[in-house]
Amino acid sequence: MKTYNFDFVIIGGGLAGLYSAHYASQFGSVALITKSTLDISNSYWAQGGIAAAIGKDDDPGLHFEDTITAGRGLCDNAAVKILVEEGRDRILELLKLGVPFDMTNDGPALGLEGGHSKRRILHAAGDSTGKEVVKYFTGIVEHNNKIKIFENTFVFELIVEDGKCSGLFAVNNIDNENFLFLSSNVIIAAGGASGIFSRTTNPNTSTGDGIALAYNAGAEIADMEFIQFHPTSFYSDTGDTFLISEAVRGEGAYLVNEDGFRFMQKLDPLAELAPRDVVASSIFKEIESSGNKCVYLKLDHLNAEKIKNRFSYIYNHALDYGVDITKNLIPVAPAAHYMIGGIKTDLNGETNVKGLFACGEVASTGVHGANRLASNSLLECIVFGKRTIDAARVNINNETTSDFRSKNIYIEKANETFYIAIKKNIAEIMMSKVGILRDEKSLREALDDIENIASKYNFTENEFYSKKLSDLIQVSKLIIISALTREESRGAHKRSDFPSENSSMKFHIIQRKDAQPEFLPLSN
Image (cartoon, rainbow, N blue to C red; front, top):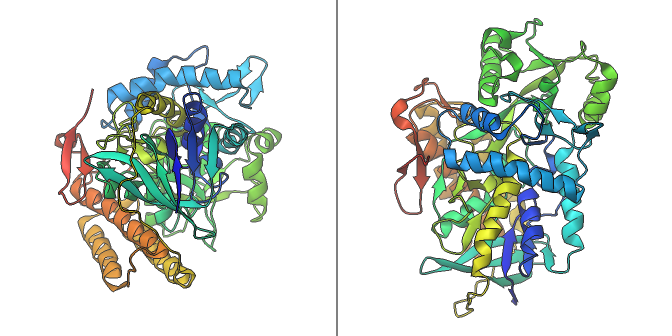
């Protein structure tokens, strides 16, 4: 087993991991670990952009109010204030760095998305913001000799003794080589878990490994019931899907049903630009009541050349399915998109386990409440990524020890087929019974189904696919148990048996290993 010592060990290759690694390299040595490659992450596929109040008619106070409104009474105000105020500064820094945002003669081109009262969405290459920003920071970290990148490396256990994290065990999932990383600062930036659902905009690697790592190490996990479904994911009979950015509606697209009726106008004053939870649940109800499989986005009233240029990726990808978005209706339906809950952290990214930090989608900072405001996610990556490193760097001189029992994991290739089949089964259970609209009956059935799978699978100790499946089952159960616990409908969490918000449930739901769910008051 190879042993490494680093000042910072960062798990995850999306924007939160890349930015944190870049910033941390100013203070010490950095290991950047990703279980796949740096071009496979939610950040890479983010189309919409990054929200920041940099416009002449905008200010952080307005961004604050929009975020709080979208969060449905469950945001932590202090966290939101940090996001919008420091977010403006971080974006101005990115512009100085040369991040290739789309520009006009007056400065950055600013788009509008649902829930925002002003145009404040910076974008790059039209609808490829995540790809362009990730490519930019990938280039930076790849040429930084203080950062060592470990791709195709799966972290399977954190080393925690006496409530303190001092490193981790990992395995290269290509050549089966095991590693030991020692560090006084371990930062989980491993992304979300929406890939657990069968209909999702996420890559299939987004299965909540970071959540499982932290949970098994004794960290608190918060608000896992809030899985945000993107309202407009491309619908096809084959099940293939891709994201149709919120920004498409921001530029004036209509949502219509099979009869061509703009149903959102009668449901919300903001119509297509209502917050995501409203639009997603409205589309779901329209599909359910009509018996159709999808609704449609209508763009043929907009300037065709502008649409082709602004949304070149969507335009070209839709053509692969025979849809010209400037002329034809685009079939869409909701898909699991973003994990709002995650590893509970303080305002500096630290968990209840000393030396263990989290940032990005995997973290629960209190920023998003019950419903994330569009394009706040990439902003959260850089704002809390910086704060996390600033808090962690005071630990650099702390000693770490290798005086513990080493652990190895091996890969039994023959188990891959079983893992993929069971993963697909769990994804279908989660989509059908823990999707946009839930109730106690469906949630308990889902829990029984998944526990039944767990009881039948022959788990092998220290085997790669057994470990991955165990983590997948654990994260699924965390989502289901939290959804059962919250007996109301709020934001991204909708229950048909509790269809209204309950004013007495304005709290975070915390889960810890070997403990019952607990309620944590909001922090203001």
